[in-house]
Image 1 (tube, rainbow, N blue to C red):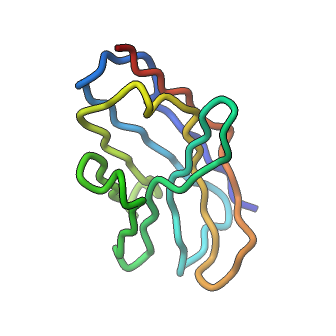
Image 2 (spheres, rainbow, N blue to C red):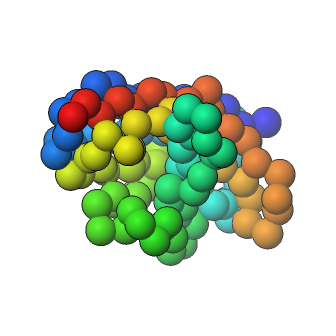
Length: 117
């Protein structure tokens, strides 16, 4: 089992920045993919960004110029730096982890990000 705890969400004005953190604990895989998804009201959950144990990052095409994912293996933590935030970025952001080549994923409880115009 793996537990994920997100933090860093909140209310920010358009154009502002936030950094989300996700700390993993438990039986963390040595070869993993960890990342962020988001779900806005009335919409499906969508990919934001992922990063592998080797540091390879993958982003949603529309977000790569404003969002940066990073990790700190010593802290078993992944970060999402969000800048130039827009009202349409308002959503619940979920952290996830899965073992490489395994589709079964663990999810955090989510953290709310609200961007006001």
